Length: 226
Image (cartoon, rainbow, N blue to C red; front, top):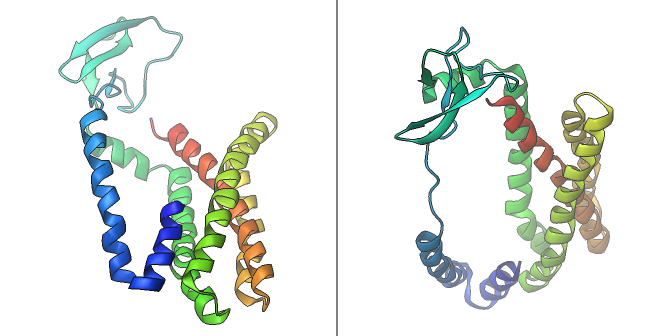
């Protein structure tokens, strides 16, 4: 968010190109310790499963398991199975494409992000042209709105989804749908009201409700994909 503030200040005083060039340098510097310290996990640790009629089906958790080592790492398969089987990326991809819940989530997330990226890309231009705000002032408000609305919304959404799932089937999916519907009026409202402070307040609530879906949506994908 500090970088967001610097973007507004630099673009206002020196132009957009200088802002991009200046803020690109810290990113390059940060990438050096990232590359040197963050290790790539060994691939294939989760690819060893039992042979069965369904190539995606994994052994039952109630069956006894036997450790097996391969060039990809160590995995497990049920005792009594003739040999482990490596499932190709193509088979996994085809399995995902045959999953109606995943396809529905995929399409809904695509439309949601299309609107979200459009709003995020043009919101500063909107407040500058419609409400006459300068980039530095807009950045100051965004420093507050983005973390308070977006971050707290994401955390609240994950917490509520866990509670909802305990009491109702499909709680995560329902929360994704409900919070998106609630966010819609705030998104429209922040663009049509004449008072800039009311608009910014509605934008705050829009971020809060719109970001609530993110954690539950990721959890749904993890539950769908084997």
